[in-house]
Image (cartoon, rainbow, N blue to C red):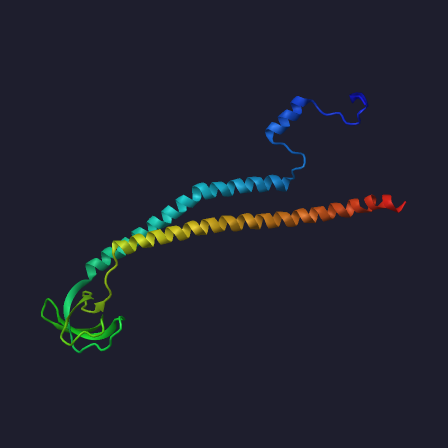
Length: 200
């Protein structure tokens, strides 16, 4: 059978080559093109936005923590106090106990501090106090600020990645619902004509 009797005559090779080079596909729907572009946008968000967001959030958390470190370091100081009673017990967990110390101005103060069990009455312990003379926890350190920055930065990176994944999956489900609805509508039009051929 020669080419002249063939019912199919292909278009010019150059035109078909151009379509292939441009990525044209007659079977691609508008929703397919939208999905492709949406995925590209999400890829840009992940490649560019994720590092920027995580670094910015981490640095902001670090700076905020460092301000707290500086404030606490300025407001708190250590003093040597004496236990007013022995701390009973043999485990490793610290227990609250009454301590007494004298301020720089000579004022005698008392408070409650965590002390190791088994410490005898009158033993010297180091406690942190604020400007008002109240027993407080040790001030935060630069290590705490660094850990806070890394934690917030990591959580932000995870949030951006999870948000991008959720957006991609949500978009895909919405488009799939629309595609299925279009297929159902098209099948409702085609099916009577298609099945009529078998009822002859």
